[in-house]
Length: 175
Image (cartoon, rainbow, N blue to C red):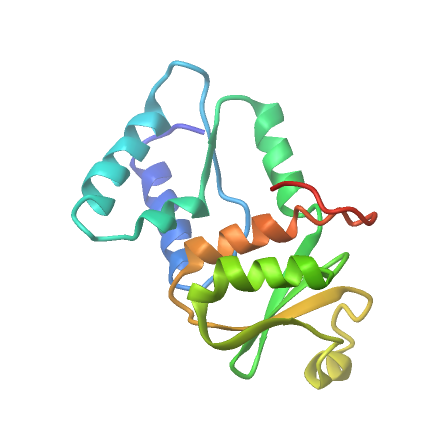
């Protein structure tokens, strides 16, 4: 919700922590009443100045969603966790956990679309890692492993969005 300097400070802080990987990716939803222009003006500043002058990448804007009603905000949060559930690093590998892991076609699509955010290797569907089994950490969930470059968190958010096209009940949606 719109506010003063503290609101802007907290917004930049949560975005910075997410953009730099100090905080796991989670939904960041900016909401305002239609026509008030608070976040719209802020997004314009961020786009024209920070992106325009190369201070952040355009893809970093994928870390946030702007909406103008409570229902859209709630839908964004629910959609974020539709299939995706959590993430964890095991050594150099980022493990993304989800209700339903991608099948071979979706896995190929993920590799084609998001190969640019890999430090090396491919995106693979895997069973729980030894570290996860040792901690009994979300063993019931499907998972993928990737050697994430730890730089392109805005693109990682898009990967999570793509994972959420996998219906936990069994079908793949989206294009």
